[in-house]
Each structure stands twice: as structure tokens, then as C-alpha cells.
Length: 377
View 1 (tube, rainbow, N blue to C red):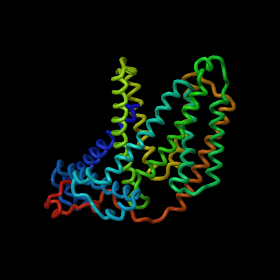
View 2: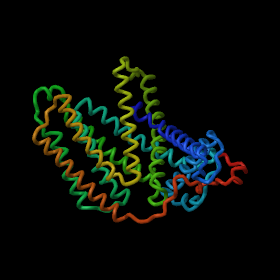
View 3: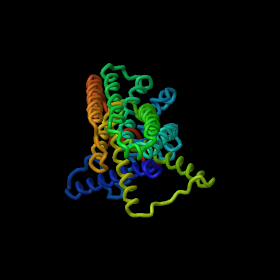
View 4: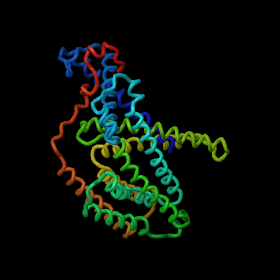
């Protein structure tokens, strides 16, 4: 868990480096062709183009963080809503970044406690059970979203919760109980209870992420919202590394646990594959959650229940009973109902908001005169 969740810190450096190099290459190509630059500024060389793009991306993050903090703290919003940051040092010392770091620290605790239940339950129960129950966080997210995010109550969504929870029960306990499976998982019920606790916590994590770490809707462009989710993931990764490394050090210091690296190439390959899979899923998941809602994004992960069940049938020989198949159908029915209800709400609320251009530098001082006057961006 330290390796997977802790690796999130690398997302933001990779993102702004790749984007900066891509834009610098594009500007250099236009310059060689003799075409005018898209932003109207003269081409000043590859290195300066990369530096300028990195500064612009951090200006955008600073502005989005300011809006996010203002959305959570009314006093801050009134006092600093129109203020910009003139340097990296000023941003790092700002209340906006302090809010983001504290919020990501809080979220990392919830996320890692919920994640720990996954690793524990996987030792006690089947992969299909664990995946089915853990993905029911979509429904606990809806229960938390109503009071915390003030989402309107919908009978369609409530009905989908009941249908899908019934499907989870069929998947977990509707399969054939042969002696081999009973011997392999003698503590299956305990594992399912543990992972159910993790599902509730993960739903709470999703809702609090939307509440604390997302800018108010309609204030920034969709591309910047997705970009900012990667910056937030970076902060969660940093906090995760600090928390879990400290826990491992204390455990090692008092002799409770001695960490060791995998000895075989196969084990390393599985670890790397797990890290890459987790990063791809998390980037997509948090990005979608930033653009829509915790309920709408989490229902998409229900598809993994069917995929894991099929994988265990194909590769591990775990059979799928008739009731389990019915449970998969109920889960997918709940998924479709939630998707329809969420999409209908988004369509009704879709207005022509004026969005801030992601590549615009209007959110912070960017004129030649201000840069020459000592701005450190």
C-alpha cells in the first residue's frame, strides 16, 4: 500500500514536465515553419518555452487552489477571492496551499485505512467477494453526498442502491459452497465484514474529496479541473508516504515488523504492474469525480465486479453459480439506473457558464512589465 498509494506524488511532476515539453516542441515547430505562435508571444528558445509553460501551469494550480480554499472557507473567499500569487514562495506559504495540504492529509488517512481493509480482506475472503463489497462504496458515497454535498434525493438513485446491494449479497453468498473453497477461506464472513467497513470509509473519502479538494463548479474549465485533480493526488501521495513510512519505521523500531524487498523478478513485476494499474485507475477516477460527482464516478467502477468474477472463473477455476450470475445482473442494473439518474441531473444543470481558459495567464501577473519588476514565477 505504501508503494501503490505513495507513488501518487510523482503524478504532478510528470504532468507539468510532459506538458511543458510538448508545448515547447510545438512552439519550436511553428517557429521553424515560420508560422506565428498561438499565444502571440515571440519564440525565445526551447528552454525558455519549457520554463514559461511550467510557470503558467503553476499559476493555474495556484488560482484553482485559491478558489477551492475560498469555497470551503467563506472568510478567505471574501478577503482573497481576487488575489493572485506573484511567486512560488508566496504560494507555498499561502492559506490556499495550507488548506490543500491539510485536506489531502485528512483524505490520505481515510483512504489508507479503507485501503488496509482491502489487503486484510483479500487474505480472508475471495477476490470476487472483496471486489463486489468494496465497490458498493458507490452507494455509501450517495448516502454521504446527500447531507454533505447537499445532493437532491432521488427515488431512482435510492432504488438503484437497493437493487445493487441485493446484487452484492448474491455475488458474495450465492455461489456454490464446495469443501475446497470453505477450506481455503474459513474466515470468509469476517473478511466480508472488514471490507464492508472499508467500503463505507471509501464512500466517505470520495464525498470529502469532492467537498474539500475540488473548485466550485463553473469557475474553471473542465481541463483545469482534471489537471488540478492530479495535483491533489500528488499531495495525497506525499502525505501517504509520510504516514505509512512513519508507521513502518515505528513498527521496525519496536520489532513488530521488518520490511523487506521482493527477492524474485516475478514479484517485482507484479508490484510494478500493481503500481501502474493503481495510478491509471486513480487518475481516471479522481479526474471523473472532479468533473462530475462522487456517485456518478464511483458507479463506473462497478464494472470491475463483473471483470473480477470472470477472471477468477477463467484463471483460478472459481465457478459462478446461478445466484451469483443474477447478482452480477442486479449490480449492472443498479449501475445503469444510477448512471441514468446522474446523467439526467447533470443535463438539467448544464448551463453556459463562462469557464476560465486553462492556458490563460490572466489569473496571475504575466505582462512583461510585471515579470521585469521581480516576479519569481
